[in-house]
Image 1: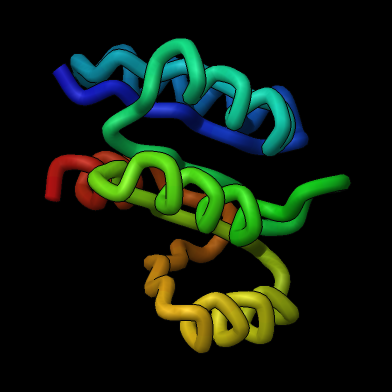
Image 2 (image 1 turned 30 degrees about the vertical axis):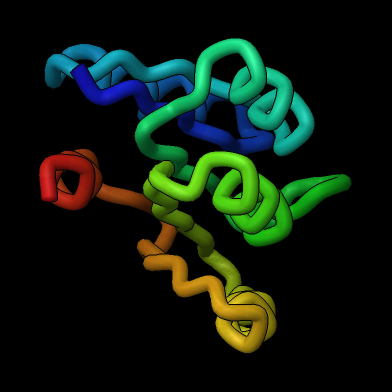
Length: 117
């Protein structure tokens, strides 16, 4: 069973997406900021991290890079509603990291399709 972390500083979004994934048969856990997600990784490394990009403290791209460095096989799926995210993604690409981005709000059917791929 695929183990998934859903990371968003808006708790209702993280909780809702985790609930959708759990209902679809995955083992999903919400995290409400990047530091919480990184801590969870230490005790139970995920197969997939789905994260908002713009969060206080460590942003989703910085967190994704840290996770990929520690757990290279972990898949990363980012989502954001802000156009400024493109600059952050380009910076990550220049460092050799290529992350897929979904537009926020994420429709549950689109999310499940990406997770199953």
